[in-house]
Image 1 (tube, rainbow, N blue to C red):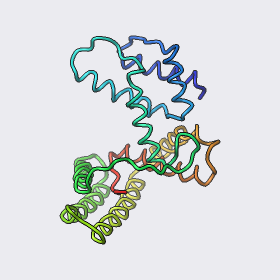
Image 2: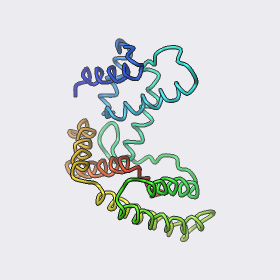
Image 3: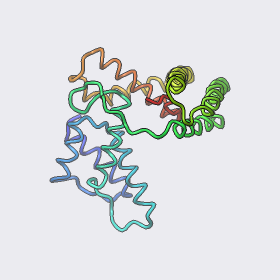
Image 4: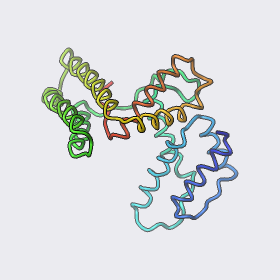
Length: 229
């Protein structure tokens, strides 16, 4: 997608968020949005950033003026950073991203992912999916008892177990996904990575594509990342 077309898509989405009030993206704002396209910010990531800003803005009370795209940049770039870390590429050259995000304490991480998994028990997913996710939740519940203040080998063992359980969770998710969902996510992954195709070696691109599908599948099924790296 050319930067100008990218900008048009952003403008149209912002218009819908502003209930039909059109804010033209021109001048410095146009250059700003074109910069996102050049960086490789996927449209869906940009849309989520706009949503995130608008949700906060609307929560403050009645709107006083339409949202301008410039106000959404911090949210969009934060989400883009998270997307890059999940996929494993940098914004510039397609190499593996080395900087890890700041993490919550291990016990808090387990509390959060267990809450997400518990919600799956009330989902409309298959009985087998709910049962297998429930089994993982039981194992996490046992791990959480030892997570507070864990050190050395005990902590390393917990982290190894989380990596193993996360691999299991991804396999469970793929088994639950039907052919239509799998095809749609593969197409979405291709679209997200399109700006990076000429910057990455084939092996790295294939790895990033698989990681993108896994991430999109987690989002579709509302599944957390269990690993704590």
